[in-house]
Length: 257
Image (cartoon, rainbow, N blue to C red; front, side, top):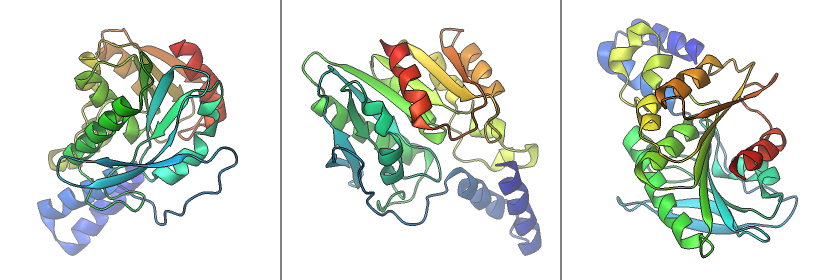
């Protein structure tokens, strides 16, 4: 992330575009939709293709596996430079144990229309919360999970709604904290996770790779402090920023059950 900021600054200086240029660079660093969004070849049971409709009329595509032997649903928000297609494939280990799984997506990602922004992603999160409530088993539990940028959406939704638990992987305190000092005045999409986590009353689990070079491991401790030390930090020894889900899944369900 730091390298992206510095490269962006060099471009702004070279072009002489000033504050407007820095604002555009800041947004381009925060949101990096991947190229391509091919439907994966499913290794196991094929999911249902589902759609979430936002308040501003966008239709977002996601994937849903109903629970088989459990009575819960995990709503998953993918990270930056990811898509619902890639996350659905990577998240297969989360299905072990018969859990329900709903993979969310955002505007501008994975073939969806629209341009991403902080408020836009929160609106997308609200749309997926509606889908999740409709898909919930009677009397079931709803859990949220977000990776990196997706953790920001998960925390915001957990602050706004009553859920049975929320977990993040490799999530930051805020974009402002991650940005170099010269770029902070130009950050439009702040994603203040430290503020959001302070208002969450559900159980909170913060997974973080101890060798994460994108979001420093220390961010987990800062988020825990912001929660009033109610959140639990679970270090993933030797893990980087993109920890394989087969390492995360058993830890996640152990914490939630």
